[in-house]
Length: 372
Image (cartoon, rainbow, N blue to C red; front, side, top):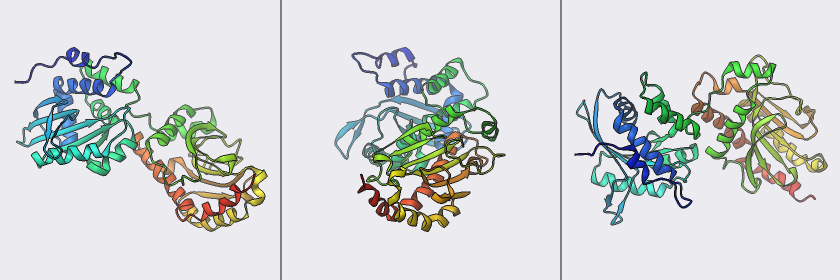
C-alpha cells in the first residue's frame, strides 16, 4: 500500500544546503505531490501523456524509483514513474525524466528507453524540459510525441475549470521561475506598437528564448564567435558576433524604423520579422564578391519573405542586405507562444539556409577577413 503523500517530508530531503540547490528534484517532488493529491490534475496530465481523454485513472506515483538495468547491470533512477490503469482497462507504465537547469543527456534517455522497454515493451519514457533545445535533443531519442516542456504542464493544468489552492500556487511557482509560456504576440500589440511605445520587453524576452532554446547551427561556426539577444538599432533579436563588423548579422523583431530607414512591409499589420547583414563602410571596398553572391540569392530569398533590399537600395550606409516579412503573416492565427516561436524559428532558418548552406557567401566573406 502506497503511503499517504506528505509534501513537507518529500521536499525536506532536497532543501538547499552547503551551497547546493537541487532544483530539478525539488520541482519533481512538488509536481508529484500535485499528481498524487489532485485527481483532476492527474487525469488531465495522464490524458495528455497517453494521447487520449481518459474518463478515470488509478495509478501509483513514485519519485526516483530504483530500477535494475539488465543491459548495464546497474540500478538507474528515473525521476518519476506513473503506473496504473484507466477506466478503459488500459494499463500503462510511464517513466519520466525531468530537466530544469541541467542539460539534456540523450544517452541517458536511450539507456532508460532500452532498459524499461526490455522489461515492459509497452512502457513509455517521457521527457519534460525547460527549453526547446532540451526538448529537441530528447526528441531525437524518444520522438517528439514523448517530449514536453514544463510550460505544457502549466498549459494543461491551467485549462482545468476548478483548481485547488495548492494547484494555483504550483502554477504561480512555474510562472515565477520562467517555466510557463510567455504571453503570445497579438495582432493588436503589433499594430499598436507602430503608433506608440509598446511591448519591446516582451519581444526581447521572446528573442532570448529563440537564442537559448533553438539551434542556430545553420550559421557557420567559422563566421560567428557567439550569439546574444539584444535590443538595439531597431531590433529586438539575435546578434551574431563576428570580428570588426565583418559582417554583423542581426535577425529577429524589427520594431523601430528610425535607425535602418526601412519602413515596415505593412504598417496596418504592425512590425516585421527581419534579417540584416551589416558591414563597416571602411571594409566595403572589398564587398563586390559578397554583393554578387547576395544578388544571386535574391530570388530565393524573395520567395521566402515579403521583400528583400540590397546595398544600393538601402539608405543606411552599413547595411548590405535587409530581409523582411510582416510578423503577423509569419505567425498567422497561432495564439500559443510555443508554436509562435517554432514558426519564427522556421522562417528565420529558411533565410539563413539560403544564405549559408552552399558556402558561397562564406567564400566571398573571406575577402573581408583578410583586410585590417
